[in-house]
Image 1: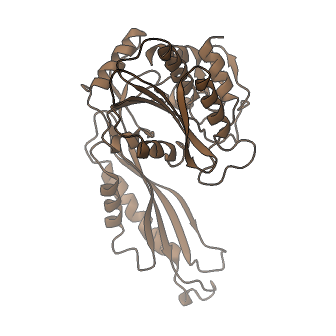
Image 2: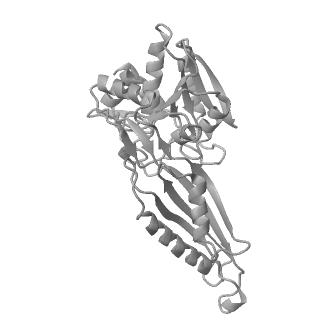
Image 3: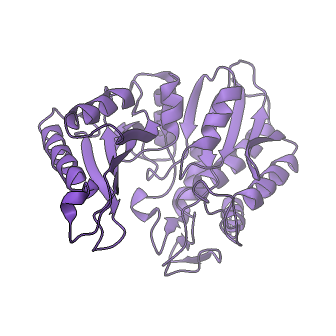
Length: 369
């Protein structure tokens, strides 16, 4: 196997399931094993690196190769993965079959991280690069983007960024943002034999859901963005009531709103609030739980031209594209940092029961990075 394939094998073997807001527990949760391995691997190759605390037991790894100019170009990828329930392949026993490596995180996104690590080690062995390079391996991408947010709080200026995600080695310059909103209606419980003695929280929520459906339909009529399409809204979960014979005193839904470039999280939140005006009552609640800005980098930006040149050098397709998903590149975009999302693997394989990545793409990514 190649050097990067060996490294990716080592990374996939290390469980790093995101605990999603809870303290890491059990044999699979948390990124500590990954953090320790990545830090020691980079240090062992003479690269200056440090660990950055994000929350108890969860740390980013930041490696730096000084160059002739500042501020740095940042290569960022995440160490955490989604869970492993229902997987049809052994999640932490990577195997290669017909040119594909199987295992949790093989595609999303330990393949990008492995390729970036090998590329950085090669650069560190030569003359100083034209610009300082920082490799940032972050925690908590799959939940709240806490790792990249912590990095950017302390980083100082960033010249530009390459975010490692499975793009099939295509140059992604635009992708959706996301707003997640929790809506709660409150009523008064009563015995269902006398419902007039109570206030049914589900009835009010039903009216709210119908209004949100109308908002979702109106979004379909808006002009699409040329690379990512139209904005969307979806009610994803609903919880309410304690028993069938009790008038429900509480109902709660979660709403997912995808933003296209040109929209803002606050603007989308205001639209939801307007749709619910006259439906929600005092004591009800409307609050966001996630605000991710959409990404759009000018196709003529220097980082786009540089990545396109690198893709051409490996014989790839260099035409800039958009993507419907969201990455922690949102945090760079919110701060005005030009970025490209680029990496091996296909997003169609991310989070799947049989997750895999093409080994040839991982090897090509090393040269591109």
